[in-house]
Length: 519
Image (cartoon, rainbow, N blue to C red; front, side, top):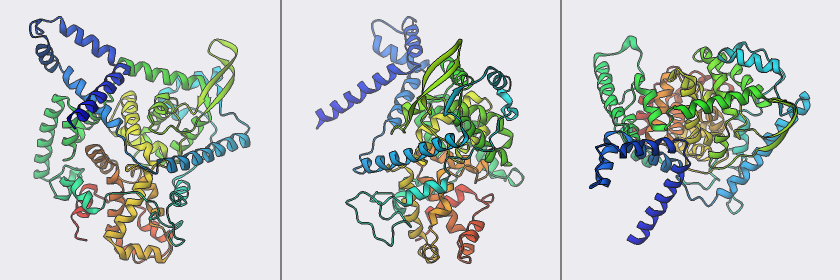
């Protein structure tokens, strides 16, 4: 048994070393260690121990530990006998998306990709920090799909062929999907700090802030600064479980996500910008249309419109996203003809879409809340990208993993039936699938639905527990909170009206109430 464990550790160590060697920051880390070796603090007679001590004193040990921690987080694998089934469903969905995109191109008489004209390139370059003034006609463009379209795909999942699916459940609920999800007892154990009702720092109206809250916030700030001084991601993760002061959130998230911006990231962001300037993709119009329909029309986010254009256009060009997604989405090779670079007539083949992601209606809202945390677009970009690769991609792809959208929907249904069978039967009586009411919340992790500070408290918890299950739990808690009004109405339109305004929702108290509730 010990031999197996030792071999497993050795295999993991080799993998980590290989990944570290591929990291863009490897050369800088290696160079820093070389410089450290020649300092007086590293003794030849006790090389190993003195080097480790010197690395610890100079912060290199924490940097190395954080790299390993993030690698292990990103490489977590789940064994799921239904992976092939869900992968097949996602491939089918990808084909439908690409078909819809091609149909739009044919209908409008445009190409998926083409070189930008010199005048267009100059206009975007000159207006890069104020792209809301960039003149482009997006009237004829439409989102490729919306959350309700994706829900239809999910509701039509029949489960693997060997599983029984009754006619009663088909197309209405997820009980036919044979996935294991956490029940209420599991969630109480997993979110133990919340279920015990412990004091957690959360957003509070400054006009009604009490002296005890102000004192608790000061204590959290003091402790948070000590955590940051240690520069160790697992400690930061534990710290977030009790809430994060607004003034420390940017540093805490950057530490946890490993999204520090150095010379490499600055050059990489410039490369993405250059790609935006060089090629005109249909994705650009979809992004501009999406921001126009969502963030630009939202009282909480319209001021960040220009930053969002920069971030989302660069994201659409990022091949690292395609490379690092656990299940690679469908993409195609597109031949771009015309003047590119210094050549008058050139033919270039590019991957389309470069990031592997075709935005849906509301996609830009994954990035919008980061505008409240980061002032610099480059800092914002790399934290948003890290968050997307760790969490958000699971919310709009057919995935059977425990953190995937299918499991979250299944968990939502089971929790609602557990918490309030009468409310569940009320929805069933009028043939209103509860998921139809909450899919837009779950798919966007409540972005654009909750007030920004409440939303960021929720996302603090996603990072703290490294889990998206808190999203489906909150969706259930909101329905329970509004149950009296929901029980009085019987049409989809009226039920949606009851749930339309979430501005009064206090995330942490509501989650605590749900986890502490007797069922």
